[in-house]
Length: 384
Image (cartoon, rainbow, N blue to C red; front, side, top):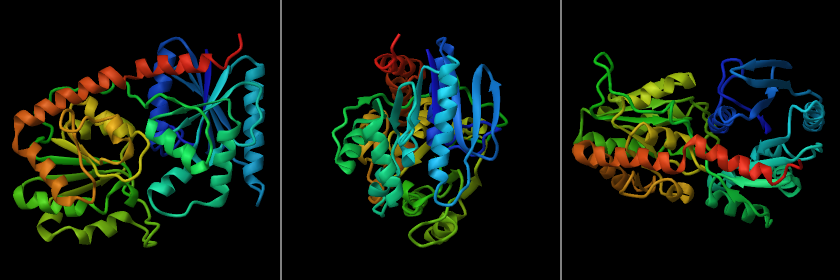
């Protein structure tokens, strides 16, 4: 099968910054290629039109046309023309696009178009209790109404998306996945920093991911474990609510003086380097309010790291609370801190959670398994 992914991002040195959508696509794309399928990446919003190949995957960088009021239309027509050309040349059988900002709207192509719901702008604005741009909501609804088929990465995301757009489109739940080969735990070598009492958050520093709750949580942990470190890895971002240019700047005054001394903000790192930061941590924390099915949780669990995560919506589709991780509401600071402290205190508990976490990933979130499920879904829409 010849599968193309239409995406605004992908973790590659020639593409630029990538978030969760790009990361999830990479895990799936690599697995599909290993299973003998041909994979193409159509990446819009780039600075130039360039085609190249890397490790057998075809990359098509797409520069968005700029014309006030018409850029969205011209970009979609440019994408449409490229897809139809590649389909005619028998390089594409099917295209998958994200629901984010409705890039699939008003694209009329000669092969099936599938949407994978990783969370639209409308979805995230709802979870974040802020208004959505009317143009984004319009295109997102139009895309969902017109595409051939829909995959949702979680039951929660699929159900809430239908509710928000007042539609009843059927969807198939196929979760995000990770490549287990790339995320296999290894012994810590002697010259690496100690994992004792190191708490890691990795992801964008932004309000919706609970970063303004994390200082209050860590302050409580710091009282019990003054030697514990909080390591933050990820890109800083502006805060929509306060108009601040930096969430990290908003966070710092929320820490106590003693707790702040134990916080290390590393900033954004290349995706290839992220594994090392996870590997040397004691546990990972994700106090988020808004996700669909986060790959970061899967990566930490695959590397046998206990996680203390949010109990909102999608969470129970990944973690069995108390068995392979802990789930706590981000605003319950004391309860959240207590779960972190329990892991820091009890080495046996830490080991039990860690082993169960990786077993969960192997059984439900392996990219090999998810690639097979995706191909089975694609096959319903491809005419031989």
